[in-house]
Each structure stands twice: as C-alpha cells, then as structure tokens.
Amino acid sequence: MKTDGEKGFYGQFGGSFVTPELQTVLDHLEDAFLRYKDDEEFNEELRYYHRDYVGRPSPLYYAARLSEELGGAKIYIKREDLNHTGSHKINNVIGQALLAKRMGIKRVIAETGAGQHGVATATACALFGMDCTIYMGAEDIRRQALNVFRMELLGAKVISVTTGNRTLKEAVDEAFADLLANYGHTYYMLGSAVGPHPFPAIVRHFQSVIGKEARQQILEQEGKLPTYVIACVGGGSNAIGLFHPFYDDKDVGMIGVEPAGKGLATGKHAAPLNLGKPGLLHGFKCYVMQDAIGEPLPTYSIAAGLDYPGVGPEHSFYKASGRAEYVAVTDEEALEAFKLLSQVEGIIPALESAHAVAQAVKLAPSLSPEDVIIVNLSGRGDKDAQQVFEMVQAAKAAVAGQ
Image 1: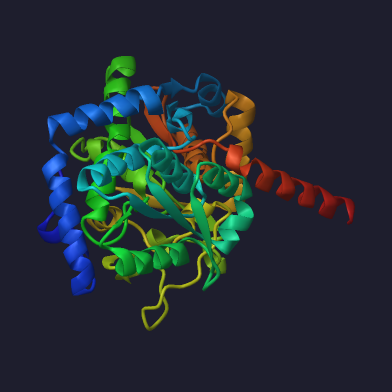
Image 2: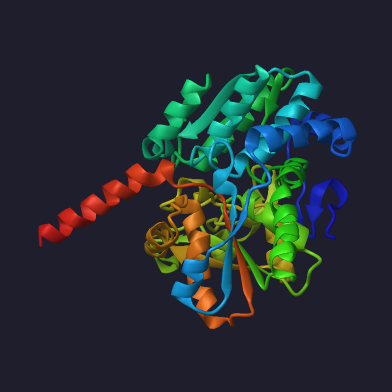
C-alpha cells in the first residue's frame, strides 16, 4: 500500500515548506502522532468514541430505487451523513482531539468552509473540555449561518475572515497565523488532508475508517469489490479516507469529483486537479489553481466545502500516477443530483456530496448490472437547505418576471 515518503512526500507532492519555528511545532506533532497512532490504549479509546458517540460503523446502503432509475450499475451509498454532527469530519476530529489531549494541549483552533469541520471541532472541544476558536471566511459565514449558530451554541468562538476571497483559503491562512503566534499552547485541528506534513498523513489516517468499513461491507453484501468508488474532492479528506484502503486493489477504479462551478471554461470553479498545475500552497506542494507568477487564483463553488484553490498531496500523486481519475461537475449538475437523491431515496445530501452523486448518475447507465459503484455521502444536506431554497425561489422569480 502507498506509504508516506521522507517528510510526507507522495511522489513530488507534499512536504513541509514552512518556517523553522513552525517546523519545530510540526515535528513535535509528528512525534506524538507516530507514538500514539498504533498504541492499543489510544485506539481502544478512539473505537469507543467512534462506536458510542459518533455511531460507527456507518451503513453501506444499497440505493435500489436510484439504481433502478438510472439503469446499469448497482449503486451503494456510504452513509457518512448519519454520523453525529452530520458528516465525515467527526472521524478525524475525535482522533485529533484525543491526540491533543495526550499532548496536554487545551486550546484548539480550526478552519472551516462549509462549517461541518467547525461544528465537528466545536463538538469535540465541548466533549473534552477544550477551548475552541474557529476561523471562517465571511462569505462562508453568510452561506452557512446555521452552522455558525451551531458552533457558537457548542461554545466555540467563530472569527470572520474578511480578506481575499473570504472563503476557505483565507480561513486556513488565518489559522496558520494563529498557530505561529500561539504554538506553545495551541493545537491546530486541520480539517482536510492538506497542509504541511504531518497533517495530510494524520487526517488520512483518521478518515481511512471510511474505506476500511466500506471495503469490508461490500465484500459482505456483494461478495466482491466495487468497480468504482466515487467521492467529492475539495481539500480531499473524505475522498482519501475512502480511496486509500482500496489503493492496492488495482481493479477498483477511483474517481474524485471536483466542482466545475459555472463551468470549467468560465474560470468560476475550484478544480485544481483538472486545470491546475503543481505549485506551493499553505506549506506543501500540490496541484494549484494559480496565475502566471504562482499566486492562487480566486475559486468558486456552490458548495462551500469544495471552495479551495489546491488539493491534498496524496490526491495530487494519485492524479499524476494515474491511480485515480479526477473529473468535474457543475453547480447545475450537483443541484440536479441533490434533488434526485432526495426524491428517489429520501436522502438529502450535502451539496459537496451531491457532486459525487452527480458523477454516479452519469456513470452508472454506461455500466452493466454486474458492476458496483460506492458513492461516499460525506455529509447531509440540512446545512444547505436554506441556500438551495433561496436559489430555487430566485429561479422561480426570474421565470415569473420574464
């Protein structure tokens, strides 16, 4: 199975391009992670919280009506939306909170885009009695007001970031600035599989529970491995959590789905694996949407959690090596999938997850009934209901006004 190289390189991607002061902090974090990740007492406590607090294992659900509606392959849905707090983010957060606890750190900071990582972090901090500060772009605060309320209700301090595009990249910038200023008593609970080493390895480790469960569950239910596994990709934590345990299963295709936004040709998207090139971002090397001098370009997606100009280094390696395929889905296609899954299966997906569903909708009819697709439903759509409602109302008003 693919392992991390020297200082977290995946082929040419990854690494740790940071100041000496921050590198000292990251080395300390890596030492703690390596000490505890295989420790039986640590993992027993992690399993306890996953089982009795989060509600794992999450079901692998055969979407019979969706499969029949589309024709072709059988579609299974990995129900990360059923986790406590409503997404996959809690898997990683509980693991990192237990790590911070063993490091003796009581102050936690985090970044969030769609708000799900922020809610999960605030939840874990409430559970373990830790001080919690969340950085969130002002635009994302506008789009995800309900999640902001949830974070504050859980005791977190939410700081609005008003620089740049006012979305996820800027929230990460501010979180790293906080860490540099307060590293002596602060734990940065990074939410995606991005950043300088060891963050991508840590997040991948705690999110791999998704793929490990899904692999065992599909063997039990179908007696064989899937033809494809599909997940949305922003930074890439839910996707790498699903993909990594299937890495050595060469007959299993892996498809990551980026946001094409208004269309790849418009420039209003967040698809670095489709249209970016290798570069440095937030202290690591990955595919980045960047201008001629290497500065990150503005990004856009209907889904706040996918609105990021880079992507995890392991996904970058999978792309460059050809192990995974990365496609892009537009806002319109994601909205149609959002509605379809709701109406056919009674499951309202997060807008992020709807991108993965949209790709399954495209792919399934081209396959045979013997083929099996697993779609990772990374989160539920409660957080997006108001946003989609407003979009639908605006569309109706526009039609009425014609």
